[in-house]
Image: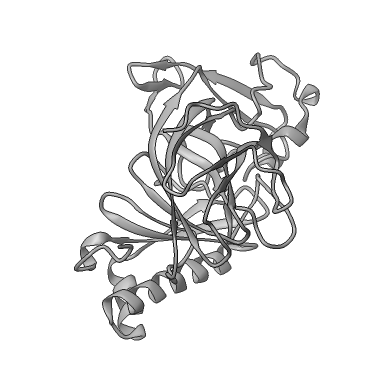
Length: 297
């Protein structure tokens, strides 16, 4: 295992960014990540106009993986998420789904007690650790870490968690993986500007997969497979996520395309992941037991 390293942080996933570290295929590494505000918010009373908004949604990296070449797939297995400190969430006029209805900003620092996030004296939320931003460098223009696309990015899926393996495209030599914005509470939609974001140490195993045509981004967790899609509208993202799952089914279960579509209508769950950015994120989920064996082997 590579020791914990103080990675650089980036604000856009970019093929021209120099890697912060190079690792071998199969490496297990631990990465330090700031919260989505780049640890700038020190007080609940801090004026938002004092924040450097260009430093929002940082991701640690990028990491160059030896042997990763365009056309490959990078399998990222999330082995551990170690949170540090307290969580921060904010909402403000112009931010999130209902920002146009707000007149003032609110910042909350939320403590953790007995593995629960203390939202108020009467409400506590169970901790569910998730990675909000994770992706590889796109082959074209840089994409801000706050957004998402076919390379990954701010996908905000509830299942990017410990024990999950996420499959990302390799668009450039070395893949240039970056990740950040760890949440300990995040609901589908993320209708405010953020979830409960917290500084963390993330341990991942990196494996280059060659000669496979799996849809990306996608993931497998303990009981389901998920295809993730980003687009300017939820309608478009929903179509792409469904099409990708259909293609995976037809390629690995030898069902007809029409049968795969009907199966998804009966047993697949189409869900919203992210709505508060210019790119919207949807995901299609299907229980793993509909495959006779793991299709990602």
